[in-house]
Length: 337
Image (cartoon, rainbow, N blue to C red; front, side, top):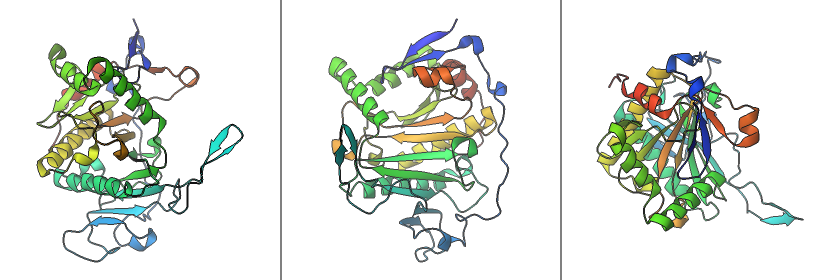
């Protein structure tokens, strides 16, 4: 029988449609074909992007030159413009402001044919450092209230360029989904004086031999959440309470995060035949300081199913793969180092 499950953070209900239960092999693989021989993100094309704002070069070299491992540039076609004042104003009952913000691209490596999951752990550490450095720097601009790190991998997930990259968008408002997460976590903390994410970690690692746990190391763990919106929706969380991604600074912490990210993406790739996916980093706004009730985390959402009329009209998500099954499939995957 199908189950209705309630997300303990947002209070959002999802339908786990066990009657439609689908295993990894039941999802049609998405074949990716190269669409162009020209790539502005490849080495030697540095002049085809806006001037870089951050780069990791181990052997020196000037800005906007070759020899980089990770490179961050402003998006050539930004969703928001960095210049200008917000000019908040009303138009009758409607509120609006200028589309001011920042939109940057993290080019994760020089090799066009390597995906994020294919990079060695040492290289992934440099990618994660780039995320943090840009988030910290953009938060110095007092116009911005939030910086979202997100990745669209594959055309099915919204990527318009094949070369592996992540994006950051700084906005003058806190996104609604983050406001809802913050408010849900705050209410839980007021009631129980505990962090709901810490409780999720404690319960899922103890519950029936960790039915929803995929993997863990000393500092992080990967789980399939209790009420997932999408099949094989996967979360990575720090095992220690931290409300902000920006606190990741220790070398061992970077290495553990890079290791579990590579492990998790590798498992998803092998189970689902390298699916398109999105990931987002949800972290507390810098202006909020250190929060006892919130816990930063990374959400990975493979693009395996489409929303239809019921989902759009009701807000319910129908997920054909129970998270306990998804976790078991992923645990059983052998991942190469």
